[in-house]
Amino acid sequence: MIQERVIAGLDIGSAKTTVVIAEAVGDLHRQPTIKILGVGQARTTGLRRGIVSDIEETTRSIKKAVEDAERMAGTQIESIYAGIAGEHVHAMTSKGIVAVNGDEISKADVNRANEVARAQPVPQDRELLHAIPQEYTVDKNQGIRDPIGMVGTRLETEMYLVTIGGSPATNLRKSVERAGYQVKELVLEPLASALAVLSEDEKELGVALVEMGAGTTDVAIFHEGKIRHLATINFGGSNVTNDIVQGIGLTQADAERVKERYGCAYEPMVDPDDVVELPSTVAQGQRHVAREVLAHIIHQRIDEIFYLVHQEIERAGYANRLSGGVVITGGAAAMEGVAALATDVFGTGVRIGKPAENIGGLADSVDAPRFSTVVGLALYGANRVAIGGASAAGKRRTLGSANVDRLAQRLKTWLQDFF
Image (cartoon, one colour):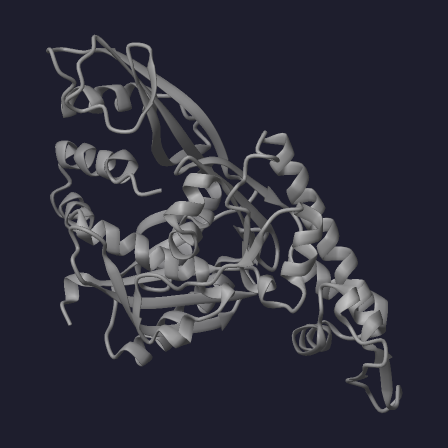
C-alpha cells in the first residue's frame, strides 16, 4: 500500500456519518480506480438539513466512523475529503471573454478566460466551492469543449460557479479538525455522487440525479456532459419516518425499523392480505397493521418529494431533455417500490444508482445507494491524486507561499474538470 495514494471520504448525513478509506490504484493518468480498504459508520445527531447544529456531537460521530474505518483498513489517515450540501448551496453561470494573444488559442488563453469567468465577487458570508468550465466559444462558434490549438481572435468561456455558506463550511471544518483530522477539500455531495453512480453516456444524454438523504433530497441535472442545475428539496427519509410515527403511533426508533423492514414506496405493489406485527409496550399489548396502510403512508410522502423534484426539473427547463432518465440514490432509495413510483411521477426511465464502476477491494461493503456520496468522495480524491492535487495542497500548507496558494487554488477550482 502506497500511503500517498490512501484517500478518505467523509459523508455526514442527517442520520448517519459514513467514512470510506480507499487506495487510488490502476493507471492514474487515464482512469483512476479505487480499492476499498475500510468502511465506518456512526449515528449522527449534530446535523440538521446539511448544516452542523452541534459541533460536539458531529465531532463524536466523525471520530467514531473514522476509527471504525481505520480499524477495518489497518491504516491511519490524517486528512479527509468531506462532502457538503444543503439549502445554503447556490450556483450560477458566469462568462469570461478575452482576446487571443497569438494565431492559435493556447493553454494560457484558456486559463485567462477561466480566471475572468471565475472572478465574480463572492459575498463575505459565502465561499467559492467549485468553478466548473461548461463550454467555450471561439469567435462565434459555440459549444466547443477544448479550444486549445484552434484559430480565433476572441475566446469566451462559460463557467458554473458553486458557492456555499461560509458559516456551515467553517463549522464542518471545525468538527473534522476537533476529531483530529484535516479537511483536504470540501466537495459538493451531489457532484461526488455523480462520480460514483452516473455513466458518461447518461450525463451526455441528459440525466437528473436525485439523492434522497434523511433530512433533504438533492437534485443535480446533467446535460451534454456537464452539470447544469442544482437544487435542494427540504424533505427526505426522516419525514417518511415521522409520518409513520404520527400515522401508526410508534416511537421514532421503532418507526425507522418498521420502515426499513416492511416499507414499500409504491402502494399497488403490496399484497392486501399482508399484515405487519408492530413493536409494542406492555400497555399496548400485541399490535398489527395491514402492510397496505404502512405503504400508503410512505407512498404519499415520497410521491410528494418526487413531485417537488419534478417541479424543480421543469423550472430548470429540462423536463423534456433528459434522454438518460432519472437516477435515484441515497439511503431512502433502497426501499422497495421507489423506482416504480418515480417512473409514475417522472414519466421517464428510472434506475436506482449505487457505486459500481472503478471500484475494487471490499466493494461488497459499499454495494448500496447510501454509499454513493462517500464512494464518490473517494473517487474525487483519486482524481486529485492522479493530477497531483494532493501534493500541491501539501506544499501549500507547508510553504505558506502566496504563489503556491494561488496555483493550488486554480488546480482546485477549474484545471481538474471531471464533473
